[in-house]
Length: 59
Length: 481
View (spheres, rainbow over the protein chains, first blue to last red):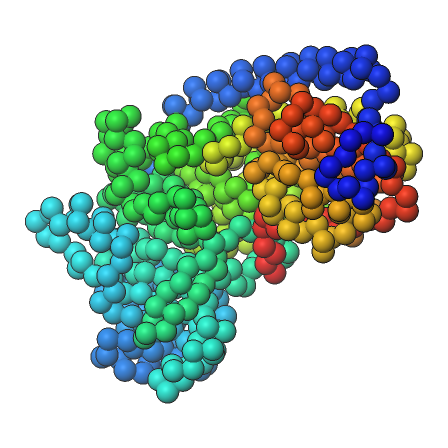
């Protein structure tokens, strides 16, 4: 049982979400790799967008 | 019928329904036919009485007058008319019935002595919607008329005067006025001041317009964190992202060829059939049929249809014309919607094996940003499908802003019901992968006990028995019909 102080009445119902430290570490590593790919592409797209809107004048 | 035509507050009563020309008669010379046409388009048959408040000193026009018009050889009137619209018939005697005045008040519009556009600061209810069921973001104002305080809800509108404001400043004004009306932390700003926000980055006259970049900079100067998107760079995600911001209650500056409008709502057909394909994840943005916009060249609450105008009252633009948009994010939202979408999809992929009822199913997802406070504020009434989930959510310390991805199935979503949600800390940056606040699936609740107590991530889970679908979250936008 995990120490649970958010809702004491439900404390006994909760257990760790991962079976082992290794499983958690692997999940986080894979998650991080996939997120980094998306975020890098996002940063590139935003930089190019910023260049585009510098030339777009509205009246 | 006109009452007190020569008075300081003449009244036009719409006894037969065709009295708009009489409004022109009493509100001239400030009001012209073009301006009158905007009121007819926006308010239509809803109006039964118009009070014309002459000699009104308008804070936004006076700002323009003081900084521009007063410096010219020939100056226009420094005062305005303000029109008040009611959906009930009033005579003078009835103007002491405060409750009735409030009940029937549709809002106001300031009429400036400017040409070619006389319609100034305007806040009216979105009556006579031509979009079917639409959802919009609104703010409220209290105004004073004959010593009576009246409240109106809506989204601000102003037309360009072509001197100090063109579409760029007008669109900025609508968004900035919305924020200052709704949130005390944003100071009120007037048209000329808006132009001054970019004076260090522009050598042109105000009437020469602004670039979209300068508009983003103006927002940044006013303490927003603008996010910039162009269709060319964001491809098939572009419309989904615009929808997501609007669904989150964040009005956006929407760029079309040589013009910009503000958008603060959408209309969707969630009863429509999904286009059959092999995707197992669909998004509510796929149902979006159009946006609700403020185009300073037209009138308040104009529909912009995905496929282009269906009637003369619709915007002449279509989705394909939208080439860029700027979302004025508030401080503390550090995770983008595209970052959250990926995080939600990865979380779902990891935890879906905890939910037999979702595995292998086609899922309908709805993404939006909200505050932890607002989300919690709807927990009791929504029930969250299980008493334990509602209890944990109510007690769990949450970030100021959270991204939420509601999980449903197409048939349930039609009924506005969901089966769970992924909640993510929007104050984390995308590279912090441990932003999961909670992942609620029909048979399981997983949440981060550690981060909620400002410690290291500590994900814990619990089985849920006998789940029931519950109402989707409605708070960011208000429904209009």
